Length: 222
Image 1 (cartoon, rainbow, N blue to C red):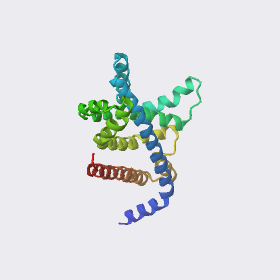
Image 2: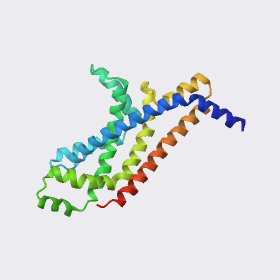
Image 3: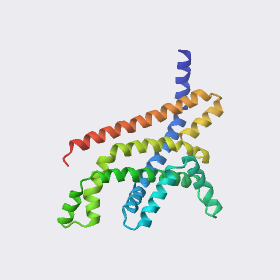
Image 4: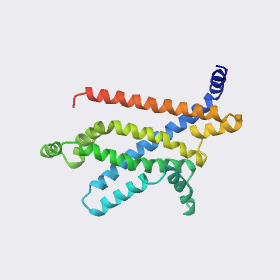
């Protein structure tokens, strides 16, 4: 009981710093997810293009970023620009690495969503005079988003958890704050537990929001 009271007091004292780290994690994850979504659409379009070279490039991209650790990607994005004479900061490197990684996964999620749309809908849209871009924007993309929503929410949760590796390039995210608190207080276990609980709260809220959106979209008329 005394240990629990002590932990609660530590958590209350650490809360401002932990909240700041959580806000950094949330902002970085949201930025990477949004940018990765648009990049993922581009990769999907490459994968669906007629020229074989486009499909090969899309498959190679997905294989590279799904087959290598996120930590290696962050370090590569951090150190490679310097070797090329480009001044890129830690924020740019971290955001770029998470975006490129998420784009690979989101392209495959969207690919599954688009594949589930009946082909007759696109034929009907063309028959009604809609061009390829308007058909994609108004017919195919909204339906693909509905179908892929659970997987996209799962990907966002994965991005939040994967963002912990950006602490290696000195970004003061939630994990970095936990490391600082542990080193300054010499209380490693409480600091790690506090960080883990906040990550759990963030991912749980995202999962609940995803379920809410999914139920709401199901109730709306198609």
